[in-house]
Length: 258
Ligand code: CAA
View 1 (cartoon, helix red, strand yellow):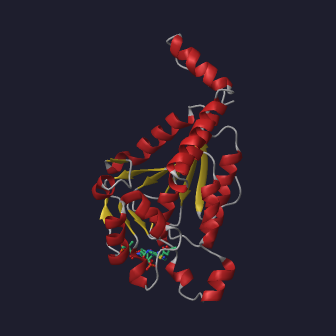
View 2 (cartoon, rainbow, N blue to C red):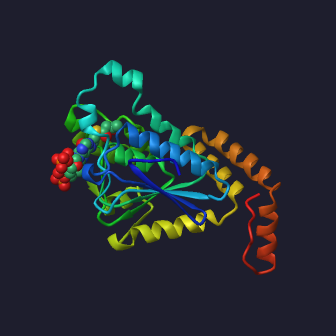
View 3 (cartoon, helix red, strand yellow):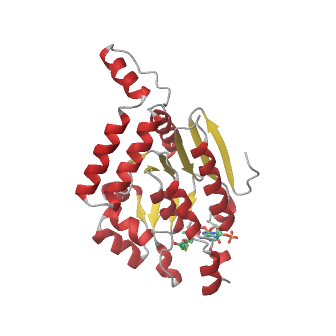
């Protein structure tokens, strides 16, 4: 692995695990974290042995947002020239599924990072919010756009305008979070889920991620056409032959991810 300062990186079987590791700052997202997370994620994306990524933090904090101490001295031109938030867009170019395993605070950029992942598994201690307004700014890594798509206009507006936190139950009720599990189990649940995903045919997973992404980006007609083209193309893979043969023969499939 590259020499990382702010994250821990580990491959477990077919799962690539990225752990934010700035405990003293509640995993605040400074420029270095952005570079390291996007670099590590791109490396896992390019690794044929990896089928799914997990991004997590600590039990106390997934990430408490962009690094306020780093931002405190920045001016508008520096923010524009360095594009310290725009670099996170690299994460959205990862083609394999990403599971966010969230415990504790997922605030501001932390909530936005979780929302850039494909699904969120939360501990019952998780707290989500976009508190930027309390600092005299607004979300900057997609919060005003992705939260509204995830939870709808009413709740997204409430959260962004007041900066209040919502707990894991409210986050699950409102559709931000896929599953809430007891605090002690969230990592095990996230890893188990990622392993199950990573065992699927990789070309199918990648095509599926593209299709799910289209639901936000395209009209229904375009999205449906995109999906149909993708399933037609997948009939070329060895894995779909194997998957269907295994079903007929009443055995587990042995995917080769081709
Ligand atoms: N940036 C930098 N440092 C942070 C931080 C952040 N976002 N969040 C927490 N820390 C630091 C604290 O300064 C503190 O450091 P010291 O021990 O050196 O004082 C340490 O982490 C522990 O934090 P607290 O003592 O505050 O812990 P707490 O349990 O009392 O409170 C908290 C936890 C409610 C999460 C509180 O830390 C907090 O409100 N953090 C800021 C949350 C926030 O506003 N996030 C949005 C940032 S802006 C943004 O993200 C913009 C964007 O969209 C890109």
